Image (cartoon, rainbow, N blue to C red; front, side, top):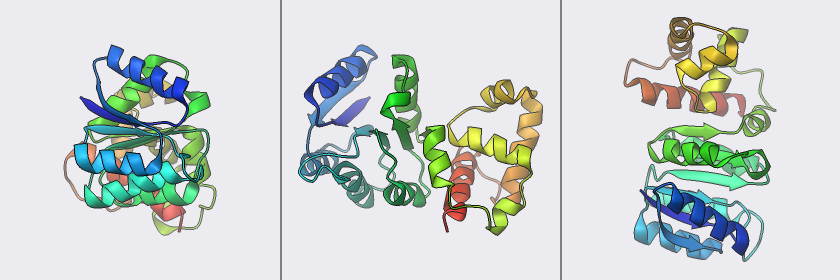
Length: 217
């Protein structure tokens, strides 16, 4: 699995490269600036990009903007954002096209290699990997949109865990529910968000995106 990595701090960039390589990934480019990232993504078209938000030359949102520009050229390009900050505006834009293959993790909340590698693989496979704190910040302006008012409190809990990329089994363990009960909740969520029958993985992604987009309006 080919990875493009963007991180401006040498020690962190080198450490991430070594970690990914040790877990079977091929780091095909490890860059430190926004322009280098965009060039690498468009030239290589990797299986997944791991991107820091704040890169030279501006040290603001250069990495996230480069990822967004690349996804406009290569729709569905999997991107995992790894950052110390939540850039709400661009995070919403990253989620808005509905194609999946998106992750946003906070550096200080990644506690082990297995957690990180699992997130990279999940995003590369077209899924989502969202830190709960990121979700909370994206939802801060929510509360008045019609699709969300249809969900029960339990369904919102299930959807929040779904947004983190958790399976029905994992959601059941967290909420002390049977897997079949979680399945009923997810089916109800799909219906209430007006998501037509299709591949379940796609509907999970669309449900999360509809949730985040609607509460951000």
